[in-house]
Image 1 (tube, one colour):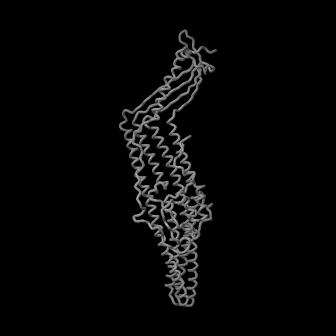
Image 2: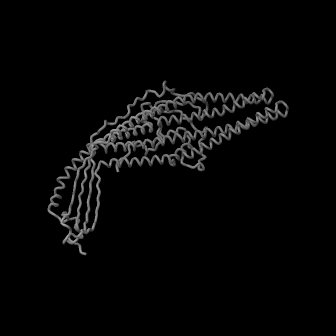
Image 3: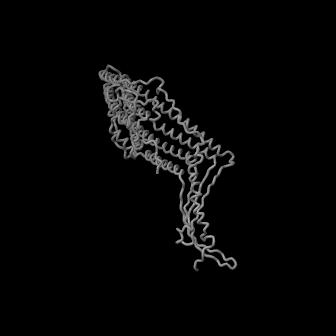
Length: 513
C-alpha cells in the first residue's frame, strides 16, 4: 500500500518556525544563569580545617643521647651518632649490603601488595575525575524511526505513515548548595589518601624485608655458633669418656655430657627450621614462591651498622610519615562527606533541554521546518522524612569526629615509635657491650676449665657449668647484635625515610581527563 500523507499534527507550520527562532532568546540566558549559579554554589558547612598540630619539642621525656656507646670491634659494634636532619631516602642502603638492596628491589618489582595498592590508587583517581565531571552538563543523542497505522473511524480510511526523529538532549544539575563540590572534594581526598597509602606500603615493605633479612642473617650466625658449640661439646664428651675409661670419673658424667651434645643438636635443628621459615617469609615479601627463594642473603658480619642517623624534628614528623598524611587525607574526605550529607537537606535543581527534528521522510531531516525543542527547569525538596536526612548528616559529623580521634592516635603512635627507637639504640649499644664482655669472659673460663679438667685440676661439674655458660653467652651476643640492626631499621621506618620511587611521590592526583 502506498504511503499516505502525514497527519495534520506532523505538518510543518509557521508557528514552529517562530518557536525555533525564539529558542536562543529564551534558552540561552536561562542556561547561562543557572550554569553560573551552579558554579558559584554556596557552602552549607564551615570550611575544613586541618587538625591543630601540637608537636612536642622532644620525642622523649628527656633529650635523647646524641651518640651511643662503643659496643666492641667489628661493623656492628661502632658508635652511632644522632643529630637533627632529614632522614635519607632509600635508607636501607646505609647498611651497605648488595644482597639487601637486591631483595628490596625485587620486592618493589614483584610484591602483590604494591601491585594492589597501585591499582587501588588508579581506581580512586578515576573516581575523582568522574566526580568532577558532574560540574558540566550531560549531553546525549538519540534517534528513532517508526511506521504507524491509525484505525479506521467512520468514513475516514486508516492512515499509514512514517516518522523519523533525531534529538540532542542536554541535562544539567546546578550545584546550588554544594553537593557536587563536596562529592568532588571527598573523591579527590580519597584518591590522595590512596597515594599516601601506596607510599606507606613501600615504606612498610622495605622495613619488613630489611627486618626479615636481618633475622635470617641472625639465624645463620646462630646456626654457625651452635655448630661450633656442638663440636666443642663433642670434644668434651670424648674427654669425659676417656676419663671414665681411666676410672677417674663416674659414668653419670658421660651420660650428662651426652645429654648436652643431644641438646645442642636439638637447638641446631630448631634454628635451621626458624631460618627456613624466615627465608620463606622473605620469598613471600618479594613476590616469590618458597621454592624460588633466593639463596643470596646478607650475612650478619657483612652488614654495616649506620654510624650517622639524621633524626627528623618532631614538628616535621607528620609531613615525613605517609601514614599520617594518609590519615589526614582520609579525614578531609570524611569531612566532605559530612558536607554532602548536610547539603542533601536542601532543595536540588535540574535543567533539561532537547533540540531535534521529527519528519515523515528521512530525506526531510535537516529541514528547519521540522525542528522541535524543549527546555525545562525542575526543583525538588524533601518536606518530611521523619528526620532521616538530619540524622544522616549528624551521623556523618560523628564519623568526622571519630576520624579526628583516629588521626590523633596515628600521630601519637608515630611519636611513640620514634621515642622507642631512640631509646632502643642507646640501650642496644650498652647491651651489646655487656654481652661481648660476658662472651669474652665465658670463653676464657671455658678454656681454663677444660685444660684444668684434662689435667685433673677441675671436676666435671665445673667444666659442665663453663661450657653451658659459654654456649649461652655466644648465642646471647649474636641475638644482641641482631637486635641492634633491627632497631636501627625500625627507627629509619619510624622517622619516615622515603622508600617509594619518585613517580609515586606526587601528593595530588590529577583529576583532568
